[in-house]
Amino acid sequence: MIPGDGTVVSAMTSMNSQVAIRDGGGALGAADRAMHAIERFTALVAGCGIFGLMLIGVAQIFGRKLFNTPIFGYIDIVEIAMSALVFLGLAYTERLGGHIRMELFVSYLRGRWLWMFELIGVLIGLFIVAVLIFYSYQHAMRAYYSGDSSIDAQLLLWPSKLIVSVSLALLFLRLLVSLWGYLRLLAEPTAAPVGVPETIDVEEQALRDAQTAGIDVAPAPSADRGR
Image (cartoon, rainbow, N blue to C red):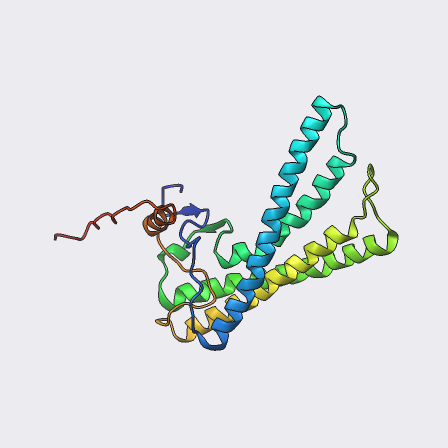
């Protein structure tokens, strides 16, 4: 956080990183749960892939230092895999509210004003992601038809580029669910949020992180108590 003039720069500490996927919620809740199941799978694939890259890195170091046999195309493998693995977690992170964002006025808003500004952000995001999907898919198809490959190991590049397009498509679908959720909240500001990240303050975020870590922390008394 940067104090002064009420301006808060937040790495989404005001969003619940362990947000619960609520039961119910009608069609919106069903769409949210279906999307989250796909997002969890892609995040699991990305996590396993990154762990695999770590093991390959260890094998590369030991093989080069001890046996003078480095893994052929190691740099190409890492470069190609990282571009795909990073994008696979985009939709999952969006659902949990884990992306970095700047909060200038949103933290002071409540009710319909808050949901309206969140809705505007989602609409802008949908436009940007749609443009990225179009051009990334074209780029992947160009690499496919041209047989584009890495310089050293001659590994094909189109699979990782296509994964980027698919990951962006999943993010687009997640933003559509969020758009639906914010439209619902705009119509009914007092309704329980469904399909959108839950807005919480920094203290609540710290308490939930502590509870996730198994630490029993009592909430601090507010300044208004006892008056």
